[in-house]
Image 1 (cartoon, rainbow, N blue to C red):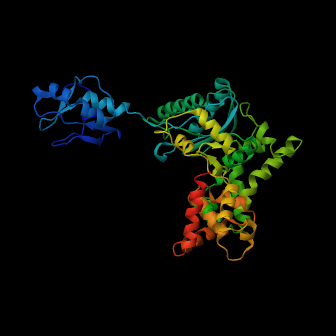
Image 2: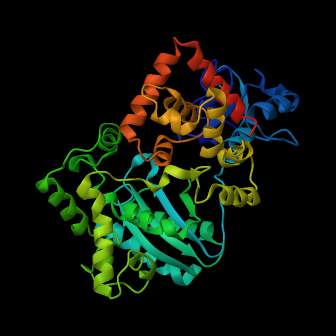
Image 3: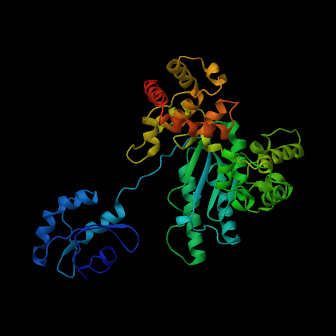
Length: 442
């Protein structure tokens, strides 16, 4: 391809003979908009001006004038390189909704680009912790917990000012520059933008801190991987045995790159880590008693083999707390509904409460809820569990928590049994439709 301006070939490269235009992937994995303009160079300016509207619609951009630079393909096609470059690098990118509040608690996590490691050795981890240690003074925030895994990190912070986005952007940008310099590489280090969860309920902080600190043992080799946890919820958890429990606890206590060793007293405390809130959340009057209580609270799940996730009841995927208060916060945050799923979830409305679903079930079936639960072989309770989890926005773990006498495994079996029988029994399918209809008017 002949390029009429030097240094622009990277944008138009790949437009070979007979290319018909449209979107195609370029050598740097971004998308290019290559539009054939005309087959004769002397007609290129007029033809380019005539096709500006078409190019604008396809590229999704607004152009005020025709470009000055064109490229000629093997068969004489003319391509507007200025438009291609502008479209490739300036197309709008969807941004997650950010809620920056003063005095708020956040769990922050980010992964390596394409699942690649963000820490290749101890030197990288020291660089990251060095930057993390500067954040309290630079941004007036508190670091309460952290864990560095090979391809991602977690931190628990409290922002005194409404500047979470600015603080984490500085952390990741600064670390990415040092990481690339140290390893002689270019390009992105982190995958997209960081994820954050706003924690509205401070009494859940202990649970979030435990989830963060248990990351090093949440692996398949210790029987605590994702697949292991899914099986444990449905089938129950077998006794892991003394040897496996000892390996789990040893892995947790020996892992050097989390704040757990600082909380447990294995390593000396660093001045930039705020430990008072998490260390005092489990009781105890003296430091030794508080450490012992926190250790028992943190290690209890790995002794039992079931790691409960605090994220089961997230509102719009980004707030942990009371649903009504969370939606008020989200409503004040604004946002773009076309780009941000959290905004669309808000506009979709609030899901029905458990009490409202029980009342509707009683009305449809003409029987009190306690009688439905006691009646042997009745499908009423299974029907409510099935409809609430499939159509009404409830998670299975949530509905199980509302029915103390039902285990996770029993609820899962009941739901499968209901939908299988509803395919052949008209009264069961009619109940499901009626319950969804009633809840749509709540």
